[in-house]
Image 1: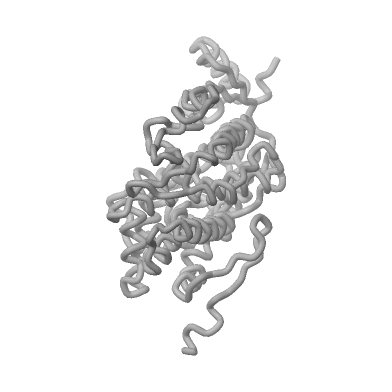
Image 2: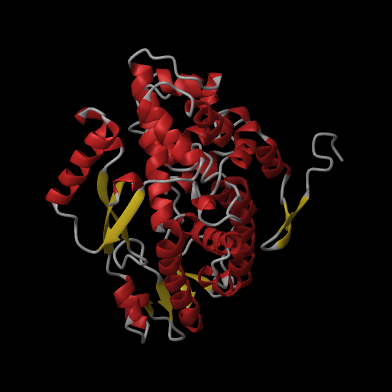
Amino acid sequence: MNENTTNKIKILNDPIYGFITIPSALIFDLIEHPYFQRLRRVSQMGMSYMIYPGAHHTRFHHAIGAMYLMQKAVRILRSKGVNISNAEAEAVQIAILLHDIGHGAFSHALEYSIVSGITHEEISIKFMESLNEQFDGKLDLAITIFKGEYSRKFLYQLISSQLDMDRLDYLKRDSFYSGVAEGAINSDRLIKMLHVKNDELVVEEKGIYSVENFLIARRLMYWQVYLHKTGVVAEKLLVSVLRRAKELAKQGVEVPASKTFRYFLYNEIDVENFDQNTLEIFSRLDDYDVLGAIKEWVYEEDFVLSTLSKMIIDRNFLKIEMQKESFPESRIEELKEKCINKFQISDSLIDYFIFAGEIGNQAYDAVYSPIKMLFKNGEVKNVTEASDQLNIQALSTKVTKHFICYPKELIN
């Protein structure tokens, strides 16, 4: 055996699935690459560990898990006569492995504060293209599939659809680590029910109840975990503290941060200037840079920066109220006035302490890439038509909740 390929078929032990085999030397080398290893230092659920203490798992865990489910999906589809070449099988596993490689520290917070106008999906593609150069074009097919440009549509649907390997892993994984049992789905059963008809991913009709359970679990996980009101305020605080640090840096104030983090604080980064140099620096930025900086900012002179940082470090967040209707403007103005008097801060800074917004959850989108059921007679129907339960239609409706955040000191 060639020295370069020796001992590259490794086995990992995963708490969800047990032993996971890394299927090829190329995939092993991608996992070993510093770009991918960074995901060990990026939390999968952002600030959710502040609410669910066990939720400390990382994007690395999730990416490996999604790759494992993709291996299983390829195996099942092949057993049903779907022709998937070895090159396609490896490419689709690489695509799902790298689908989250562009996530910044604390997952979504950086997208809204430090880097502007470029999404983590776009950064993921930049990472893939850079890796493709380093690996002599061996990722060509994986990138084509990831972008949805490959001729075989169902391979893209395995990566990105309403029943993709990404969702099947993160729901099961996040449920496990958060301890929220309502999110536990039978990913094994769902994958065994997959098939391909007219180049589209479908689910065999006997899998209808597993699909229903999956959609209900997704809805429950969003309201109970991802959009938990304390999680919402923690995430908003993190975005606010990063925005304030960036604002001060723009004014020429010296804001303590690691060399890597400083680059993003003191430079305007957007889709136009996100070049290879920026990508290299981004590949070294993780949760530790951000949390280390926030610990230092507690002692900064700037009232906003230090107060918000202390709230995060001490887990003493702003008060959050949530309801179905939007909050009246008069209520918001009253709270702002109270806050200005209480903390003696200027009008220009008040939005850091008092802010309103909305969150929405649609468990199933009947229009975008609908889940399709395959019947024994060869007929294909959307799951909303196939299901005999009204709850699928209900899950297709977007539910919006409004929130308002303000300092606890303002409560009379």
